[in-house]
Length: 232
Image 1: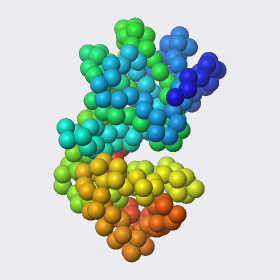
Image 2: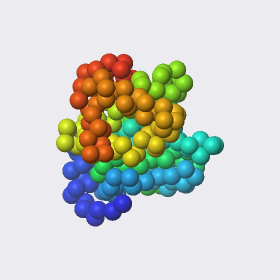
Image 3: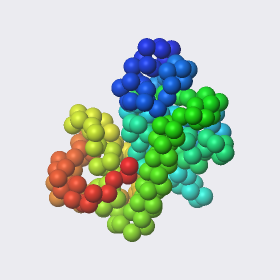
Image 4: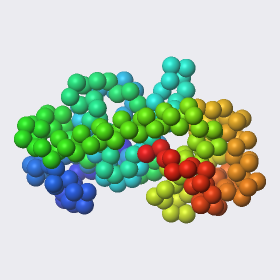
């Protein structure tokens, strides 16, 4: 993670993402800009956050840690997703792992700054209520997917969520076959089961294994398997 000292960049990103409609100019001027590289942790289970993070560029992967030590995917976050809003008021400890997928830019606003903004900023309050509603909705959807859908459909949803805003060149770099063990954990299945699913999708010409990476060949058929369900 790198902290970028560039007030003009903060102002520009705030304008591009319509944050100027939700925050006062004074609040935006006090925000910090951070760049996270692929795999960098934005926050981890047990952290006590003193700030709220607003994703303005890139993508984040959010997963929860289970008592048995395994992980389960919650969703992918895209701009303008917020991290830390659930923990903000009551200062709850963080319950999920949040990591960057590729390079990401986040604006960081301190807790004291936000509490001051809440006093008479109804636009910001409406925005955060909307974010919380989205998180509740997607959590229910993700839970149902992980319990009710076969691994083949969950893996298709995972791939569609991972690649939905990327170019073909980026897709080659996104998922390596060496990471299938981690992916299996995130989807609540075994590596052997997921590997059988991968082989079947390769035989059907939907994906291809090339130089240790998986590439989507037939996005339309993959989308049919996902059936409109995404981890978002």
